[in-house]
Image 1 (tube, rainbow, N blue to C red):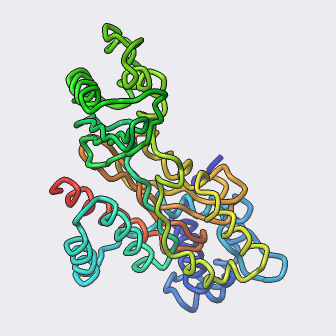
Image 2: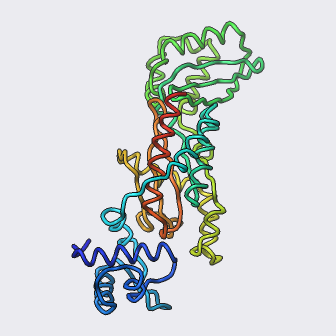
Length: 346
């Protein structure tokens, strides 16, 4: 339970967080009074810090006389105490220029965004593709690869394309392919893929499946055809080397945490997509134990939804809890907005 803090307690907590973010070293009362013009003596600040520790907003590492923020302290700072941050014109131009030059297709654009985020934030950046099954079907194309193999190309309104190869247990002709493609598009174009997956059989129930091998394989494969991408197809990570430079991860045990994080993309997707599940349109910040995964207890995630057509994806940064939250929130917010604009143009 959060304790209501006085203005001077909030002031001291703000400076403890800011100083720890800056130095990565536990913060003492004398350090605070020397650096910031609080108008309080070191003894007064020391007493306030003691109270903040009792309340659970900072804690006291055994090897130091200084204090560091707890997850709860970071949370109060992010929600109520941090200042707003404005990107410089140079930073905005850098982002805009990179997207302008590399907006030839969605995959390239998302890859560039991931790299820009990692470069400008010095954190691990992630971009999660829009949810494929929330997009509306534009068309399905069927291409004959051999007498028994069919390439299915599914294009959705957001611009995403999924391809899958189907094996058919009898010979198929170009006429059969053309007829199947025509009826499938007539019945399904314009519908969300999730709805197609749930209602495919009803919508094509009057077609004669028994003697039409293509329609039969569609009926058998509908769940696979219209479901979302596999995890490895859904997320782009950039800047793992940035985390290795942070003081928090010099310890070999903590280094192992980074390896697990990068190898298990499901963890990242689950946490980053939490904000979309909650319908949050602003920047989403998840700190330490809030991530609900042992792998992420030493990390914070700053993420936001971006839009592509009728679908939404997520982008953000992952780094140590000791991050410049003001700057991370501003950058993620700006990049999300700009990316949505570029995807809308495309």
